[in-house]
Image (cartoon, rainbow, N blue to C red; front, side, top):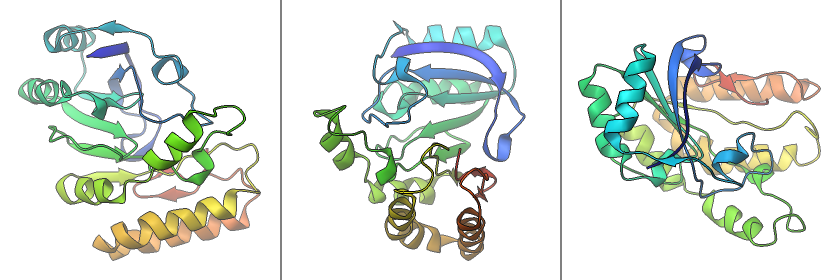
Amino acid sequence: MKVAEIYKSTQGEGILASTESVFVRASGCNLRCRYCDTPLASFEPRGDDLSVDQIVEQVEQLGGSHVVLTGGEPMLYAELIPLGRRLREKNRHITVETAGTLYLPVACDLMSISPKLSNSTPSPADEPKWSPRHDRTRDAPDVIRRLVREYPYQIKFVKPVQKCLGRDAEAMLDAEQQFIRPVLFLNAQLIDRIAHSFCRHKKSSGKTVGRAMGGERFCA
């Protein structure tokens, strides 16, 4: 499994915000979000090929009870299955951060899903190859439905602060049509919380952080 970095830090998002965690960042991604803040794991993937044993050893050296498997897109790697199993044997709480385009039967205590909306697609002028590919790949509602059925989960919609208007309306409509209606009907209370966040977002200047699905970012 190609790993960009393994480090200890504080979780900054979601229901586990402020929790000290060990982050295992997989290198490689099947998307190319225009606002990606980890190009070392996507646009310019780098890192080392590590075995499951090597990853677990580094995690144990760093200590702590919470592990975040992130990327890039960790679900690209089948090694995530034995890795999750080993971490579970070590009594670690496991969060998987994913865009929700791929499914693996992994051991996971919190599936942190970040669906990529239309505002994530890179410009065709900047990324002529990746722009259409990204737009096709990012839309996988069936995968998201399966993940939310099988795991404890949170949903986060992340977008850049700059240019928060303009394509915003398109992105929000995209979210409602693709994810909120088909997925969140599983929990009516979550729908109410999402709707409340949408209202807060529309009333803001675009710099307010809306809270939804356990506190994840709507706009960041």
